[in-house]
Amino acid sequence: MVLKIFFPQCCNKADSGLLVGRWIPGQNSAVVLAVIHYPFIPGQVKQYIHQMRGQSGVDLTVLGSWSMPKEGQEGMESFLRDLSTIFPQGQWLQLSREMGKIGFRCHVLTRDPNGKLIQQEKELKEDGEGEKGGKGGEGKKGGTKKGGGENKVEGEEGGGEKDKVIFIHYEQRKVMLSQLHPVDNGVPDPQTESQLPQVFGTVCQSEPLFFLDKYDDGPVKMTHWQSEGREGSIIVELMKQASTPVCLLTTWILTLWTSLCSSRILNVRPMRFISSKLSTCLQLSYRTEHLQTVCSPTRATAHNHFMRKANIFVSFFVDVSLGLLLVSWMYRENRIGKLANTLVPAADHVAKELEELLQWLMGAPAGLKMNRALDQVLGRFFLYHIHLWISYIHLMSPFIEMILWYVGLSACLGLTFALSLLSDITALLTFHIYCFYVYGARLYCMTVYGLSSLWRLFRGKKWNVLRQRVDSCSYDLDQLFIGTLLFTILLFLLPTTALYYLVFTLLRLVVVMFQGVLHLSVDFINSFPLFAMGLRLFRSYRLAEGVKFRVLCEEPGTPLHLMMDINPLKVSSVVQTYRTPTYSCYPKDSWLALCKKLFLGELIYPWRHKTTKID
Image (tube, rainbow, N blue to C red):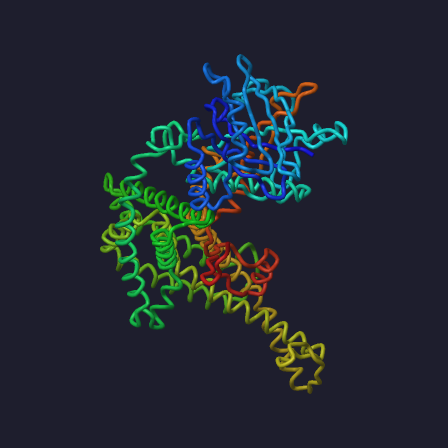
C-alpha cells in the first residue's frame, strides 16, 4: 500500500520542529500544512492546535517531526522522535535532512496492537526545492482523471514488502487560493474524486493557521507560505473599510427607488404597458437588481456567491467606464449639435426613398402584373402615412438637439443604458415602417387564411374549432358558389398583397436585426463574467479544473517524487460556469418556425423576451 504525503514547498528549508497537518480519512494520505519550530512547549502546541481546530473546522493534528541539520543540534532527531509519546498517533512521520545532501530520510513509525512503535524506514533522495531534477514525463490528473500511475510505480514491487512512501510537493499559496471544479469528461475514479477535493479543502479551510508569521510575539513559531509576513494590500484594506458605509447608503437609495417603482401611480395599465416595451426600463430594473445583489449586507461565504458578486461589480464598473468615455466623446467639439443637424435630413432622405419605393410598387414592379385598384389604394394609404411621419419629424426638429443633449447624459449610468436608449429611439424613428409591416402582414395573413379556409370548402371539409381538427362537412350549391367567387377574388389579389408584405417585411427585418445587435451587446455586457475571465488569464491557478503531476526524480531503488501543478479551467467552461443569469435576448423560435411565421404572415416582434430569465 502506498502512503502519500502532500508536502508544501515552502517547508523544504524550515527549521527543525513538528509537522502539523491532517490525515485524510479513508485514504492512506497525509497533508502537511506547517512546521512548528523548536524550541516549543508541548502543552502550548496542543493548546494552539486545539484553538486552530475550532477556528478552521479541520481536524488538525501533529503528523510527526521534521529535522533540519544544524551545528550543535546533533541529538535533535532522537529528541523529536521521543515526542511521539507526547503526541500519540496511529502513525508518526519522522522526516530528516542529511548534512551536505539534498535529499532527506523518512521514517514511518506505526503502533502495534500493544501500543509500541514499529519503525519502517524509507529514504527519499529528492530535490528540496522542487525545481531540480525535472526528468521524466508528465502525468495528468484532473477531477476525475487518474494520472501519473503512482500506484503502479510503488505498489508492484512485491506484495510482501513494506508500505511505500510517495512525496507529492505542492505550492501552498496556489492550492489555498484555488477553487477545484469537477471535470465532465474522462472516466471517474472514486478514490481520486474523494482525495483531491479533500486535499484542496484542507489547505483552503486551514487559512487561520497561516495568519501567524515569524514576526508575531507568541509562544509558537511556524513555517508556512505566509511565515515571512502576511500577504495583503493597504489599498484593499482601505476599500474594505470604506465599502461598508457606501453599501449602506446605496442600499437605502435602492430601497427608496424600488418603493417608488412599486407605487400604485406607476403601476397603472398604460404606464406598465409602456415600461414593458422599453428596453431602457428593462435595463434600469436589471441594474437595480444587480446593485441590490452587490450591496447586500450578507457576506459572500460560498464561492459561487462571491464570484457572482465580483462579476456583477466588475461588469457594472466596466459598463459605467465605457459610458463615461462615450459621454466625454459626445460632448466634445459639439458632436451633439452635429448629430441633431444630420438627423432631420436623414429622416427626409429615408422618407424620400420610401416614397420612391411606393411609386415603384404602384407601377409595374419587376414587370409583374398587379391589381390596379388594390395597388393604388395601398400605395396612397402608405404615402399618406409617410407624409404624417415627416410632418411629425419637422414639428419636433427644434427640440431634437435639446432632447439628444439630455438623452446623452444617460450614458453616465453605463454604456448599456445608452445602447438600450438607442434601441428605443430606433423603434420610435422607424414606427412608420412598423405600421407598414403590420398593415401588410395583417392583410396578407387574412388573404392566406381565407384561401386555406375556402380550399377546405372545395374538398368538403371544415375546421372544427372545438376539437381543433379538420372534419367532413356537406355544403349546398349557394355556399359553393359564394366560396368559389371569394376564392377567385382572393387568389387574384394575393400577388399584390404578397408583394407589399414582402417589401415591408424585409424593411422590418432590417430594423429588428439592428435592434437585435443592440440587445445582444447589452446582454453580453450584463452577463459576461469579466472577473472570472480576468482570473483565468492572469491568475489561472485560482480556477482549477484538476491537477497534473510532473516527475521530479525517478531513480532505481528510490521512491517516486512528484510535483503537483494546477490545471487551469478551460475558457469555455469559465464562461459557462460563471455567466451571470440574464434575460434572454435570443429568438425563442427556430429558423423553421421563423420561416413558417413569415410565410403565414404572423407578426415578428423584437427578440427581447421580458418574462424569461435564464442561466
